[in-house]
Structure formats: C-alpha cells, structure tokens
Length: 147
Image 1 (cartoon, rainbow, N blue to C red):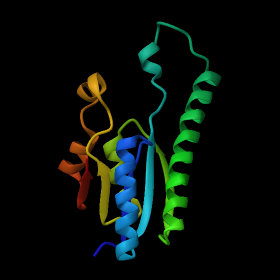
Image 2: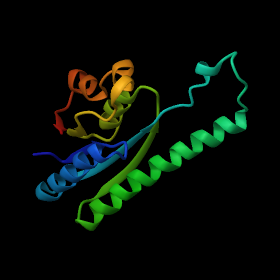
Image 3: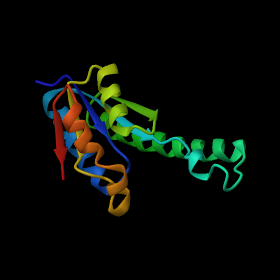
Image 4: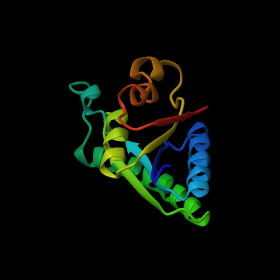
C-alpha cells in the first residue's frame, strides 16, 4: 500500500488529529513516517519604512520559530518510534506552505500526504487561503485530509 507517509503539522490541536492518524496508519501497514513543520520567514516587508527592526532581532525570531518547529516534529518522531514506526523529523522554512509540503513529499519519496482540514482561523484563513485545499488541488500523490 503506502511505503512512506508525510504528515504535515503546525503543532495545533487540529493537526494533532492528523499526526495521531498518520502514526496509527503507518504502524498498521508498516510504512515509514516523515513529520513536517513549515516555518514562515520573518515578514520584513510588512514593516518596511514603518519601523526599524534589527537583523539580530529578525534572526532571533526566526530561530525561535525554527526551534518550536523542530520541537514539534521531534515529538512526532519520538511518538512514532515508540509505536515501532521508523520516522524522520523535517523542518522547512518557506512562506509557501503548500508548495513546501508537496516539495518535501517529492524529496522524501512519500506516497501519501496526511494533513488536517485547516489550521488557520478567521481573517488569517481568508487572507492566506487554505493550504490543505492547495495541496489537494496540486499534489501528485494522494492526500488524506482529517477533521
């Protein structure tokens, strides 16, 4: 069936459902797991000309975001391995979340992507669109969407 499953997570309660299901599925069919967290780049252009932000502050913020992402996927990896599932933890830095998910699936030869139906709420979802919808529309591998 599936040999390598990519599970995209943002650490939210909703994505936790996708993580749990992906680990359960991988354990049941003997597949490997790739846990992915996409870290956005610091939005420097939003403040351009308005306020001054030092390079050090930007680097510190991006490091904090990256460290959080690494902790999330390391936790997924540890949980999967405790269930006997071989797993990798991947953190990607990109403002294009859906593209990063699809690129990671391709890079790691994943034959299934598992993700939550949505992670953002309110105005963020309206402005940014649905990453899940974008992956569903453009992915070349099957996508399992969980609510």
